[in-house]
Amino acid sequence: MSGGVWPTDDIPDDDIVFRRVHSQWRSRKTPSGISAAAFVGTRNGGLYELSTDWSKYSNAQEARDRAQDPAVNGVAAFVVGNVRQIPGQKVVHNPIQGVPGEVDNQAHSLVVANNHEDPEIQRLFQRIVTLPIPLP
Image (cartoon, rainbow, N blue to C red):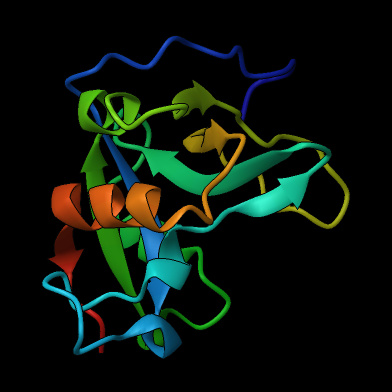
C-alpha cells in the first residue's frame, strides 16, 4: 500500500459489485436461492448501506476471502447499472483505509438507499442477482 488515502471513483454501470452471502441466508422459496434478508443493508442515520466489493479492485473469490469465515459464505454479484435501475438505489465507491478495527479494502463500495426493507425492492434484487460462488 502506498501512502495517502485511496480516492473514490465513479463506478461505471457495466461493472460488477460482489456481496458476501452467509449460508444462513439460504432460501428454497426464492429463484436465486437467497433470502431477501441478504439484500437489507445496515442502517446508518436515515439510510441503508449494503456493503459490496467493486470488480475493479476485487474478484468474487477475494470478496469471499474477506469474510470472517469464508467457508460458510457464497458470493452474490450485481451489474451496477441494474442496481441503479431499482428505485432509490445508488452505488458508490467507499474504500476502507486506515480505519481502526477494519481491514483495508480498496474495493469496498456501498449500495445506498432510503429503504431496502420494501418487499418490492427485495424482489427486484432477487431478479438481478447471480451467484459466482454458490452458498455452501
